[in-house]
Image 1 (tube, rainbow, N blue to C red):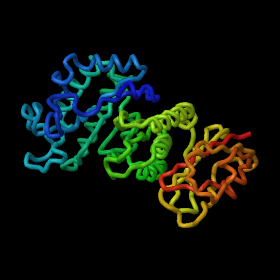
Image 2: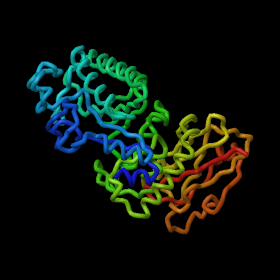
Image 3: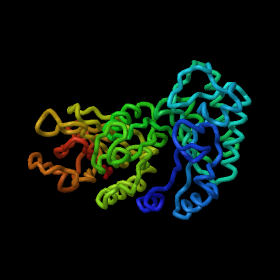
Image 4: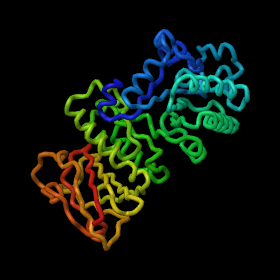
Length: 379
């Protein structure tokens, strides 16, 4: 899987749940943060060495605030749980009381030991159940643990994940470098979520992954082009078994990944402006470079439109007096319908900012689960 990821353009490989304790399913071993030598007889060193040889960095999944009742930690310290002993578990797990200094000290020690032993570049820090009681000390304790770990390991990037977007706020953004919006990797759902999250979150911290052909949360099967372009709107990644890909899917994913890597620097430093579409089935935005010299517009067709031809998409944030060269990156995603043969399908256009914002640009007819990607360069 790592070999395939590197060939497609991935830059980091993350080992997810299951590497520690006797974690063969989600009923056991949360809290026992020691490498399972049944699965990794030589520890994680051979895997990490191979990943680094491929030119990728290495990440590891943790869920430090949680504990399974069936764990060595809970058997040793039953008083460390947050809330009553007879509480209903969530996902077979309970929460550790981070308001207690000895709990934070223990977590800091075991996590630091792994970060000292292994060249880990990134932590996916998960949080997969609600708190059983409301306790501000839990939040202050989590912030203290994040702060201590960052001071001790300043080169390690931390992603905040809480069943997806359960913990995204200004406090956590001060202490982590990346957040995860949702465990749903259905690209149609992500399109809407990313659109709304852009009111608060910049691209640089908003993780968005290309999910598997069949979404594990919705059961939908969506085209690779749509899945890849939705992920490329934000901090792009892959989250699937890459061995399922056909040659055609691999080629599409590799091409979109290369485009993302070539453009992300100015996109991450730019501004996301949400667009109002005359067609409620289209979710659109424009990302504009900090110097205003270029932009990319994304128009996602989420469902079949009510009208026969697409309405023009009006942009915003451009210089009305400037000329822009406009280019449709992916005309090959157009369906075979013959109506609406718009000029953008057949070559670049040169239009003023006033026209692009006032009249808009005509897009080709699109089937549901199509993302049009339009680049613009100020001339």
